[in-house]
Length: 239
Image 1 (tube, rainbow, N blue to C red):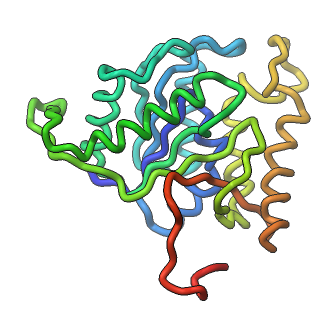
Image 2 (image 1 turned 120 degrees about the vertical axis):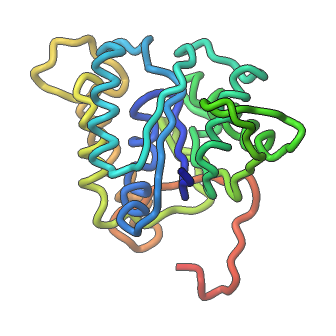
């Protein structure tokens, strides 16, 4: 199954927080979108592997993505090495996405920066024909390199290289985020507090989108950084 966009997150909920609005918008435009979670988020203070899995499935259904998989890497301890790169390469060659979106290049959680570099490196290596991989049916896979690799924003306010207008999709984004009931603000929860479980954090998701939207003259937007210059055919392509 070929996908147009494949979004990676170090943990379930990373993708929703970083680019949920963009994915929902592209799904509405008829694009085939997938999500790959690198870990099960098993070290998270709140929730369990089982609850995170159920929440991730519910969130994927809200966004309308075609596929969601979890690679089962060790939360907090995965590294950017050959073993992990090959697993991502197999996934890239399986779905052959035109665009890959992954974690922020630098962030508060150590897995985010690691995940960002791991996926980026795998995207390059996936295009090398001398790296041999086989699929789940034992068949040799063809080399595949995405056309673009973008990085979403997370905890830190990294200055984006471009933004995507997600006006009309902020409600879908927030619904997909709040599908992770064990992770985010719930005034009736008895779980320990974490940096992302506060009411302020939940509200910050919306006001960041509003602020990025304000800067470009739209209602809501999501920001991304790039690994190479973004090019347009004409000045009139710029919004």
